[in-house]
Image (cartoon, rainbow, N blue to C red):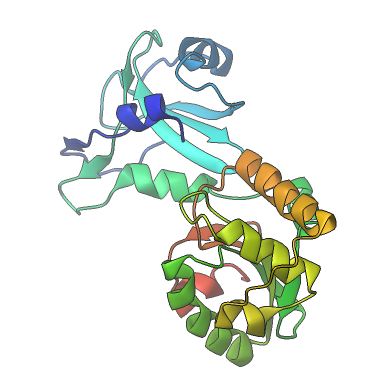
Amino acid sequence: MTKKLCILLSWTVLLAVSSSCGAPSAKCPSKDAVKNSVKDLIPQDFTVESVSGVKEINGLCEVVIKVGAQPLVFYTDSTGNYVVAGNIISLKDKKNLTRERQQEFTKVSTDQLKELEKHVNFTYGQGKKFIYYITDPDCPFCKKSEPIIEDWAKKAGVQIKVILFPLPIHPQAFGKSVALVCDKKGWEELVKGYESKNQCDEGKKIITDNLQFLSQLGVNGTPTFVGMNGKMQSGVPTEEDLNKLIN
């Protein structure tokens, strides 16, 4: 997410509304008009997925855009000249309506799933069902996730397809990722923190390609999970979170 958009999305809007977003209650600008209005705030390529009136909030329009596979929700007026960024929370039932809409649109397309498959570095477990596990060898939250993933995969009969995504905040992670690829290592070595001086050119290219594609997809942290159904989940998961990726 860009710095400009992070600033925009740092505010939280608390409104006493009781209905979900999406029902028309205002005349809203077109998708093209919205894209032209906000393009200077979002330097990455993005698509406008939806523009619709917010029920019960007269004159407010909801906008959903996607940067890669990542949705962002903000609000505008009927002219598209003003932007309200933040979370709309229903005070009646304490629901975060903005987050719910983001979750609805957090999904990878069929074509993106096909491309994701090309970046799998190794797998863990067996099964007809599968998920993609995007991880950094030095990510502490990934380490917390790994035993959860192992237990769940065994019980549910799911294959884990691992894609290495070393983050710049972990300076040793790129080299560790390259070594795992060059030495043809897998899940057990990842979990144990494998290191090697083998930095073959092929491994460097594979990891660099992972970084480029996943960044375009909108992945900016680990662990990130992508289900066979296209749904995405970030952070340390529960079994319930993981089940949603295969059903």
